[in-house]
Amino acid sequence: MAAPREAEIHKDVQNYYGNVLKTSADLQTNTCVTPAKLIPRHIRETLQNIHEDVTSRYYGCGLVVPERLENCHILDLGSGSGRDCYALSQLVGETGHVTGIDMTKVQVEVAKAYLGYHMEKFGFQTPNVTFLHGCIEKLADAGIQNESYDIVISNCVINLVPDKEQALREVYRVLKHGGELYFSDVYASLEVPEDIKSHKILWGECLGGALYWKDLAIIAQKIGFCSPRLVTANIITVQNTELESVIGDCRFVSATFRLFKLPKTEPAKRCQVVYSGGITGHEKELIFDANFTFKEGEAVEVDEETAAILKNSRFAQDFVFTPTGAALPAPQGGSELETKVMIRDPFKLAEESDKMQPRRVPQGAGGCCGKNKSC
Image 1 (cartoon, rainbow, N blue to C red):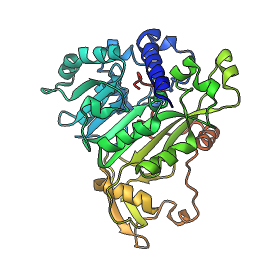
Image 2 (cartoon, one colour):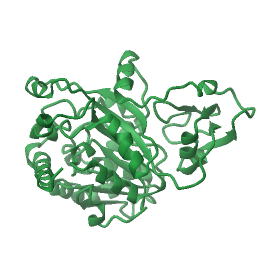
Image 3 (spheres, rainbow, N blue to C red):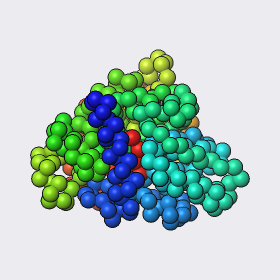
């Protein structure tokens, strides 16, 4: 995309989220709405400690909160008024740290204004949250160093970025080896037509810049990430007659994926893993993604890539790894791994989920949107 077009999109997004939208009631589609019931109790409790001036500038209801956050350093892309950062700051604890970056200056100012309030509320002697003004495709310009974060999160922000590959390259650069990008975003069922891309409201409402879902895996592999791990997905119904006429046959889905940056080591072997339990909010069961659920004390056979992710990430301490074939507690579907077809298509998962309602979801997996945006 040509530089002038990128600059125009940046300006439009800043205006939409800095001036046009004052509250969530100003949104013109339901793309940015996630059922509140998806937020688990331990996360809801953190939200109760956040100042209403911050939450009132938050467009959506859902969080992107992965598991095992204690002491982690987290970067929030498109942090807006800071709601998620202040929630995460409680989960990482005073020895962890959360950095939020957003391109909309008025939102960053709101977030900064309540830093002292929240640190006092949380009982922290030293602030563990920092807010930066900048673009997510240019994290270096904001002073963010190589391999400085354990986790990067984003909730419905990357679709607003013209150059998505560059944004993901920056994420890869700032992640530590073993780190992950855990993010929700909007995806399209086909390459988005130009009339949708050029529609300012559809872009601002997270649809015009949606990535064709198959392209995510292509971009991720090109950069060096592991294959995208699909967590949850929900079909988007626009419910706006005028905008639906522009969208036509193109369908959209909100989906949560996790992308891991692993060290360049010897390939891991297929093995059996046993979850030790105890992760906050997931003490007895860890729903890792749409393909793997780990119950405390039960053996699960995993493929080579899943084994590599678990062994080389912050989850390594939570699992016992044993070569395939060893005597262990009854495997959960282990014998079916050879023929198992991994679920990667968010539209397929969303359709299956609709048929199985009510469906349990991984705790903390939010939908789109749910963020104040950044470029």
